[in-house]
Length: 329
Ligand code: SF4
Figure: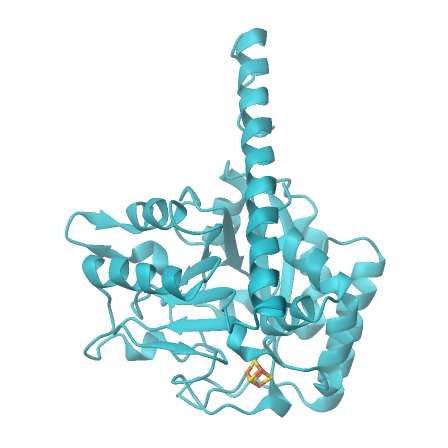
């Protein structure tokens, strides 16, 4: 286990190891019980229970990424949520039946209100939800006690730097030095970077701290971000490339079936599985784009929604993808 230091006595190491095992067992049991209850409410009781909340705490960010429409709104009123509103919103999500909360932004690691910061927010949320994750640009130490930390990397060094404000070295160093037990990389494929995903996957295999990679496709919000959308042919080739990487044994979390379905976008979307929270406190059930841009399903790139929809339809690959993303250690 990664947290066991080399210089502690053997019996202490065993104690730490057993403690870790207990925690992992507890996590598996908690997740399994939560999912049984979730499926029972959705399938038997026919309740419209959401699964995942995408919780934007702030639009503030230390970067200006080409593909991002959100940092551009950092100066607007309601662009940064306060602690009290955030806690009230967590209770609202809990009441709706939500199981997973993913804090994002802007840059969620920057989030602060009075004496509270992201660490306090995550600790509070962990007492309420089955799983709590943070999606970050990776430029801050990856030390928040979330169940999962996702770091966005969008290419090898040069391309990532062009897309994401010269942040590659910082993100790489933080990935290298983190002791967090569940760090994943998130790669958003666009027309500038889709050909490099194999190269980055190869480089990442040298980092033992990274447990896997999830992939999604650039979506055009039309809110000031650069137009980086893949052409239909690039989209097909990009997805085939990801599937090839999976076959070669790279730890790509997305399921092959849902990836293939995203070539033509002919999958059934259950967008009610998702709840979106914006920094002004707006809570909307449905597509990630609702309130954030124009919903255009034929250009959808939101693989997490595709996998969640697959899991609801009992697709084994999507259920495994969910387990690998949120639970497995
Ligand atoms: S854009 Fe994608 S996630 Fe949104 S409703 Fe359409 S298919 Fe679902």
